[in-house]
Length: 132
Image (tube, rainbow, N blue to C red):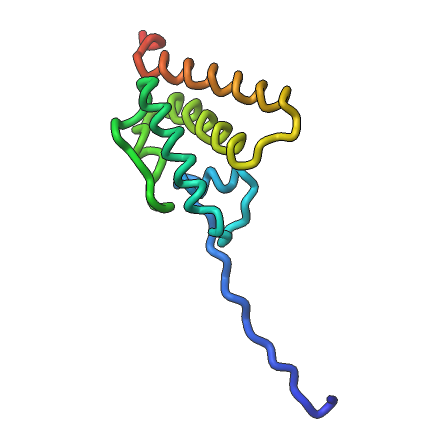
């Protein structure tokens, strides 16, 4: 064995997750590692449901859907950082509670109550109620 050389290969680099991407940032929130795409189809479906819910509350572009990690939050929400912050938290929490539900019903209900407030606040912000 001393005469044999150890053959090593470089591992393929793991791609970085893009924090501005709707899919990638949701994966970060769900604690999924970069390069792990096993659940992408499921996450995309859940994200699209929540983007539609946000849109029905007056937030975002009508009919907006994602199909991969190239869609950015700014594409759906525009440049308003207040609305972005609220809508991101709404989508992330709603997707996570459906993708990886907490064991406790009380915790799950608290998260859903929080998301209801988030989407209400995003709607008020989107309608301009806080503008001077």
